[in-house]
Image (cartoon, rainbow, N blue to C red; front, side):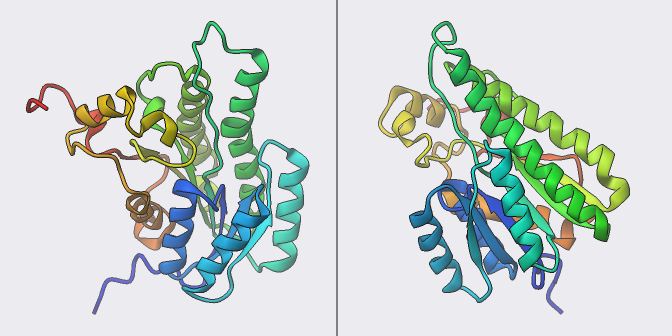
Length: 260
């Protein structure tokens, strides 16, 4: 008999930032694994296009307008979800932003915006989902951390601070909510060119440096992140909580290796 531990049939998932980049790849992967997926985004056109693709996989998927920097928007989305879905089994916090700038020139408004989206928005969505999941004593929350959760990356100080905090938030919530049957984990992607960072990576010295310091000598494909999310969301990960799963082609493992 085939292993059934990765089957998400009957589960409902909300993916914030689920209409582009890694969030979209995760949403598609969850749908392929059997979950009913709701994508959240600020862009109505991207919501429609993503939902159409999800519906080409299976029935029951939908999208909602969501701005994770706005608590009223988060509250409205979860109110809507509660009226339309019997439960929420999976939350993926994939909405994010960055700001590449010399820290000496970074404004307070720019700093606060990055932390508001990446950290506070993640916490508020975790809080709203956790309250709902506590009622049925089960659930899986997956946050998106970063290589910057572990190492310093140049000229992204606000992003790095926010992602280091996301890793700690993941551990803290896992510790607090295990008693309610809620597992909280994170994925730390390596270098995956997306709309958020492609201009910084494609054909640039920064991009080449990343490739040369990644043992697999290439960037990741967005689809390669989906398996980690499916695992963390699934029954196969029933004893996994408080973990940050790194998917980086070996970047963080790299010390002295073969010459590029």
